[in-house]
Length: 112
Length: 113
Image 1 (spheres, each protein chain N blue to C red):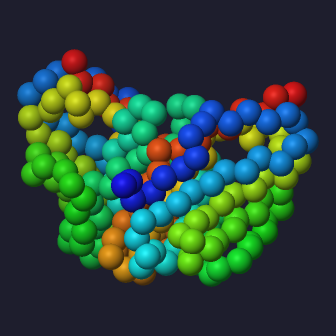
Image 2 (cartoon, rainbow over the protein chains, first blue to last red; image 1 turned 60 degrees about the vertical axis):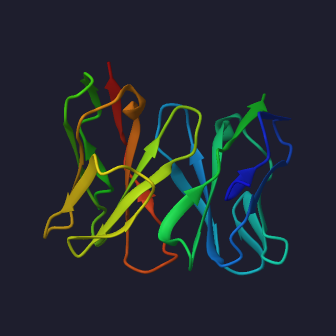
Image 3 (cartoon, rainbow over the protein chains, first blue to last red; image 1 turned 135 degrees about the vertical axis):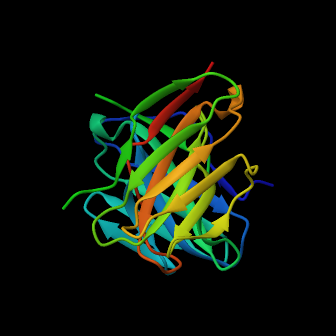
């Protein structure tokens, strides 16, 4: 079992729709959860982080965390073509120290 | 406020050679982590430096080594390059405590021929 798994892509949504990106993790001691956006040929850019169970909203982005289910998700409302990128889920915690463990990413395409 | 910087941007080497990559962290950050990202994969943790010491290491061979300087900048050295070392090498800076956000530099694209 991979330490961090993301829903297989690619994911394609029409402009204005909600894009839902999912991630599960195996380490129950994980404490911090991050979503990075990576455009083709560029480096990852931090867009959201969440530490506590529940929802965290920032503009069009909402991160959701359920530690009991070891599940974290990212919702993008009113998706725009500029949101087309690969989204990486990353986790760290007690057993991993401060290193980030990444999933393989989900490629999102928003069609105009 | 300068973000994370890395040099060089691109590098082409041949098998068996050695390479040094450089990173300057974001202003105010004291911790530098290095990651390797192969095409189509998520970044893989190589090691992390804090207070000029390697604090944590991922599953990479001893050919990969590093250093942190008093000004918090860092180097990644790779000896005896293999074709499989071709990847995007990312430096991330953060403040020293578990769970804090890590900010990535633009990366160095290494090609080994």
